[in-house]
Length: 324
Image (cartoon, rainbow, N blue to C red):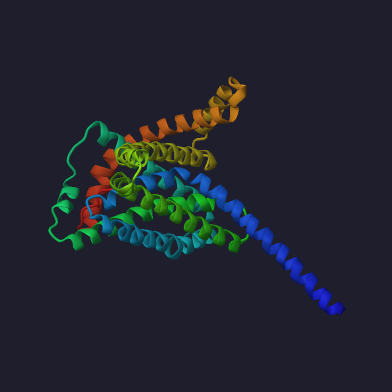
């Protein structure tokens, strides 16, 4: 009997440890997901364009295939690669984060530049002119998964840098949880967004009550505005997150701590001036300045990417870099 009681005590102790670990993983995953929110918003804002122009019955299958590719990117490729890098060469994580942050700044600045000075995208026009719909679908899915890989790498690296546990398995499980949950959230939201106009059309045509039909018409009218809003928010988030990552990396690596510290002091001073909303004001000021820094850095990187990296990519691979 005493042996059974001892066994039950051991089982209870193990259960407590497991429950605590689950809580720790959930807390770490939530914190990491919050840090990566800016990239997630951009991911959700970018993806719907890949189903634009396809028939309604192909939209969800395309999103499902992109989502599966995203899970593969995160769990099969990035998770083991980042864990190995963090174990063998942890000092490389911050420079990698900074490189990813600089890429986000470039992408955000390029979107701002294209919105101010629009011009035809010949690569996209060639895709649209493709006579074979199946080939076009495969091209779109492949391009979306490649784009997702870059954003997923940034998300997973941010998540890894946020996890504070020294336990290797805790880090791995947390990254896996973050990867799966973020993928489900992003592509679930994308599926809802791309089908919202179909839902609105169905309601407008089939509902019996006038308010329901009016609501359906409102959904159809609102969707282009929602997409435009998501695009703006996604671009702003890329510049804010990218600028913040680069500035924080400069401070952590002691390359140039002055900008990060100065912005922090400015944000603190602004927060003290508004006692009723100190937390929000401090975040808003710091995010705003980080975003301006990200925009300036991104603009400086545009000629580097288009005149140096782009031609080098073509010379090495023999292929034009796919438009984002």
